[in-house]
Figure 1: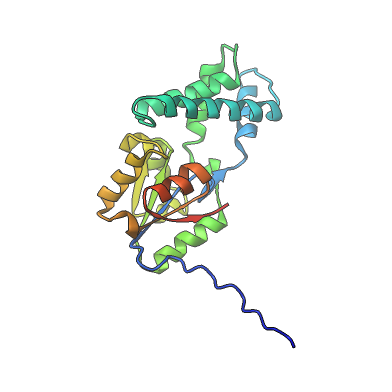
Figure 2: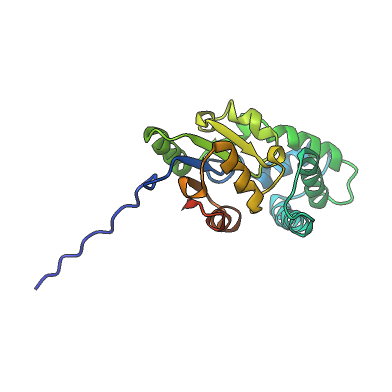
Amino acid sequence: MVRLVEPPQATVFPPPGVRAVVFDVVHTLVEPAPDVAVVYHRTALQHGVNLGPAVIRDRFRAAWKRQEEIDAASRPAHATSRSRETERWRRIVADVFPGTTAAEAIFTDLWSHFGRPDAWRTLSAGRDLLLAARAAGLPVALASNFDERLLGLAGQLEPLTLADHVFASSEIGWRKPAPQFFRIVEERLGLSPDRLLLVGDDPLLDVSAARRAGWHVRAVG
């Protein structure tokens, strides 16, 4: 006797009851192109510093982790501002290129570079979900640990241009995974947690944090 097995049902997107879809940005909707290590390498070369992309990649990861630990240990944890986000990136660049007098000039060029639309490329999985949310007639928001540069990019870079609201950590004063980040987004959208869906790639900063906040979650990447 042949047993017929029903195929798994596709997950409904957006889920019933959701009234707005909130998207993380970096590695969810867009990603650096070329990648960060290559951009750092090329920028450093322009200032007479020759460090290979593989070394840069390892140092960048360590520097990024160090800054995340600093924010988690601060009081209150994960509070931020425009000045803190600028300093975060200045310190990361200094840790990637220690002992060089060109670090500040490299930082300045990198800060400018990643604020331009041509530094990024669209990720199709995230874009398709954003388009699906729009097709369902729901408002779409961006909510990211990016800094104020996101405000300019959102007006120029597809699919960010399709968002109705933009929430950058430097502007609301908190970074994910702080519960305050999610509370402020809820307040500004005028919706309760159970009416919101976060689409994001990071298991801790997006997925786990949003679930703790009581949101629906869709992981990508």
